[in-house]
Image 1 (cartoon, rainbow, N blue to C red):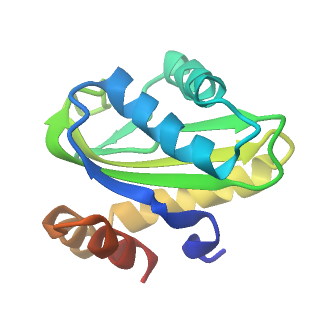
Image 2: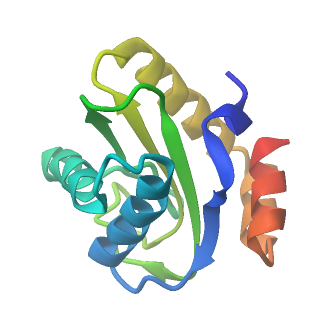
Image 3: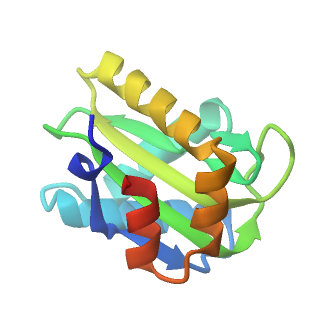
Length: 147
């Protein structure tokens, strides 16, 4: 799957959210624009429900929050680069500055797992991660992640 089919430029941002809750709210707001029939609160609750099962902070300053929603037809991704790393209860206990969020239809479990796996692999590439962290704006961030 081409990443550009699920991640749009307007869902890529550089921000200073300050906390785990604030960054999940930001992700929810950005994703809600892609699904006007959904409220950002519904999206936030889906992401929060997943975080309650265990942190999606995978280490090395990266988190991949994700959720399933029954009332969407296609997956939506959001990429956030935090100006200042935030506490995220990651497996390595390190703060997070790169978040790739994924929302998928409830009935697309296999695609969901495949996409998460591909993103984790991409974000574990030291060159790509370095380029993401060096990005100065949303356009550059989007270009690095989709190339």
